[in-house]
Image 1 (cartoon, rainbow, N blue to C red):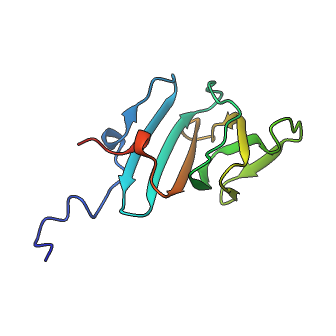
Image 2: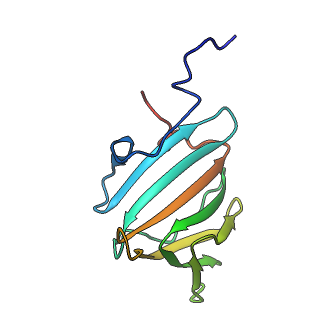
Length: 129
């Protein structure tokens, strides 16, 4: 039985819940499940530091909640860019290259908000608390 403590089951998206990363302009909040992991990103418009990469062990699905994302997805050497707006979704199955992203901030906060869903969870993102 879980009891009354919901601190590991219910999350709120207040500003102080996001941690800074080693990339300037990138903040995140990670929520770990047993088989699924959510990583909510708040990225400053124009932030740099995205590179082409792939996940050999993890499937990734991303939802744009604020701002926009201009990125590449597909073959490692693809030059075709995809532009996603608020409400758009992408999926990067295991082994699919993606990145080289341009983060477009919205008019209100100049931020791009992306919810990434990973399955199985990534150990390098796991909440250590």
